[in-house]
Every structure is written in C-alpha cells, then in structure tokens.
Amino acid sequence: MKYLWKTAAASFAIWFGLTSVVSADAVTGAEIVTLGEDLNPQQREELLQEMNVEEGNVDIVTVSNDEEHQYLGDYIDASVIGTRALSSSKITMGEPGSGIDVETNRITWVSEGMYANALITAGVEDADIYVTAPFDVSGTGALTGLIKAYEESTDEDIPEEQKQAANEELVKTAELGEEYGVEDATELMARIKEALAEEDVESEEDLRALIQRIAEELGMNLTDDELDGLVSLFDRIRGLNIDWNQVRTQIDSIRTNIGDFVDSDEGQSIIQSILDFFNRLLDTVTSWFQSRSEESSQK
Image (cartoon, rainbow, N blue to C red):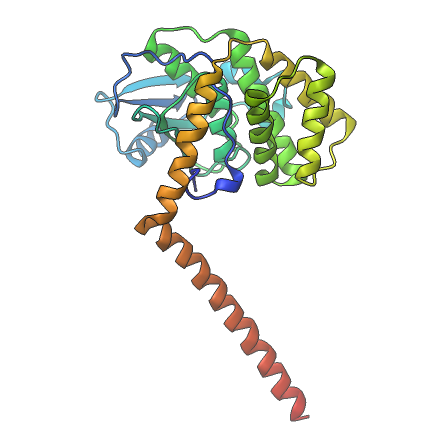
C-alpha cells in the first residue's frame, strides 16, 4: 500500500520539522537503497529488481540486526525486532516542499504513516520512500536503515537523541494503533504536533492537558500508562532543536497535495474503484436476501 496525504488525509501524521539533516546538496531524483544484512544473495537480487535499481548504479547502505536492536531495544520486545535484518528500502529525493510519500510491501506492523512520522522526526523531508522485504516482516528495522542512509549520503550526523525519539515515536504509534486503530493513532500524533507548532506549551502539565484533550476529541480513552508515555516522549521532543517554520511549511505543502490528488484522474479512479466495490458488495448481499426470501415463501 502507498501512504500519501493525497489518498488518506485522515490518517496522515506529519512530524513537526526538526533542523534538517538533509544537506543542501541533495539532488532531486537521487536514489539511496538500504538492504538488510541478513538477506541471502537471491533475496538481495530480487529486492533490487523489485525496487527497479541495479547494484553498482545506486548507493547501497547495509543495516545489521545489531543496529536495529541498538535503536529499538529500549522501546520494543526483542522478539518483535527479531534476529535477522531483512527490511529494505529505497529513498528518492523529492522536490523541495513536496513532503514525504511512503509505500510499503510485505510490512505487517509498521504503517506508511508511522514511517513518515518517524522520518520527519529524524529530520528527513521531501522524499519518496519504498519499504519492502522478501516476505512478511514487522518492518521495525527499516527505519534504522533509512536514517543511516541519510547520514551516510549527506555526510552529516543525526543527533542520537533525535534518532531515539524517531524510533520511540514509531513504536508508540504502532502500539496505539493496535489498541485504537492505525488511523486514530497516527491522527493523534499529527494533531499533537500541530498543536505544539501553534500553541504555547510551557510545562509538562500543559503538555499533558493538550494530549488528553486531543485524544478525547478523537474518542480515544488513553490509559494512564499510555498518556504518561506520550507526555514523556513529547516533553523530550520539545527540548530538541525544532524549526517551527518548517513545521508549517511541511504541513501546508502536504495538505495542498490532498486536493491536487483528489482532483486528479488517479484520485478519481481510486475513489470510483472504492465506490464500485461497495456497490458490488451491496448487490451481492441484496441478491442473497432476495433468494432467501423466495425460498421461505415457497415453503
């Protein structure tokens, strides 16, 4: 599935912009590939073909399972991370202001919106992201590879606290998604970030009240532990070097794309396909009830 503001506005969650780690030298259209270290040669080749790239013609970054545990181990059970690095990805640099588009394949636990959130937390912006694996995997390790790729390609170090925040955010959103649904979980994150970009939050108490208010607006009855975890995360995020102007720029540019997509031929085609599906489903159910009614009248 592809994660776009354009196709799922309700579930889009944009992280507020941190000081960008993507260098000004990043070229629109440039590609970077990340590959899990534990792919066998056949899997490696198949994924490169799937991503439509050739080894030798694209920069490739390898990610190990140890690196995955390094950044995720404090936030998620080791069994979810697993013992092999298999998640892989391709990043294509986009036009300035284009936002982040994410598409996943065979990723079962991390949604497109969660990747988008965490990547912007890490300072990444304006890129097309494709995440895949040789078979169904949780997808937790892909974020490690994506961040590592940007570090190596831009020759800049992302602060450790920024990486940790991105990974913790990914896990918390996934866990909330299991309880409340992915759309509500990502929307909660989106609204918190937007509120932080627009409102004065001076204390932890203010932050707690803000998060609780937004959760209630979404009909989410957060537990004390869930609320405490979000307060802790966002309190630390507030201490990072945040470019609030970039917050507004990213949100505005992405939301502009919503209308552009809905009005496009592609958007109308997708909407019509959904409507056709439900019409066919309704016809099937109606026919079934009519058949049952006729059978009953003949008895």
